[in-house]
Image (cartoon, rainbow, N blue to C red; front, top):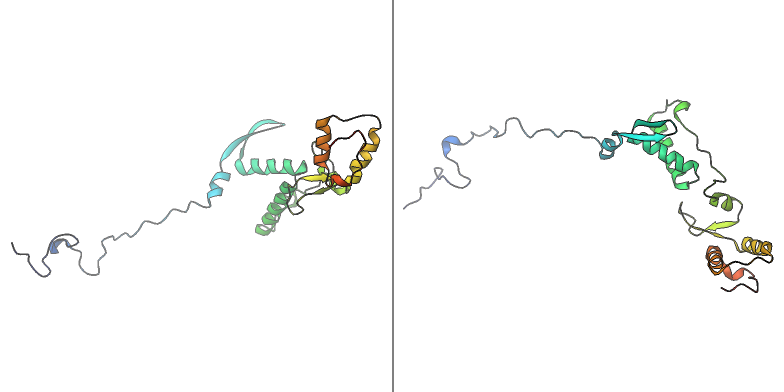
Length: 185
């Protein structure tokens, strides 16, 4: 069997001459379909409707509104990270829309003493220090002079072993405290 030579060879990647597209004509005249713009991935999530429960009961809201309400609550409770995020969001909104009315912008007021978290007050009064200054959620430790004053106020009252361990762990430099005679570390 002989194989024909030239342009008449039919096989893999060589269709018959009669079915080939002529030069200059595309095999896909409409072209590649355009990509649908789905927007930013988080935009689709933040536009979803959710149900939030507040003092007025359950009501529908967007996920973005629910997130901002949650962030605002955390900021008012004294969470420094949430306060920083709200400041960033406020600055971003002002940058995008300088005509935003003052009614749309909320001012963040730092809460000095929160019923659930006195850490901010302790830091302001220099009664405690953050272990890692540049992290918004770092642990704090009590200053040794504050622990010393609190021990002096105990007079005859004694702390159990678990309470003593808690006090030592919460003190920044326990070696600087003059522990009472009954104290066992």
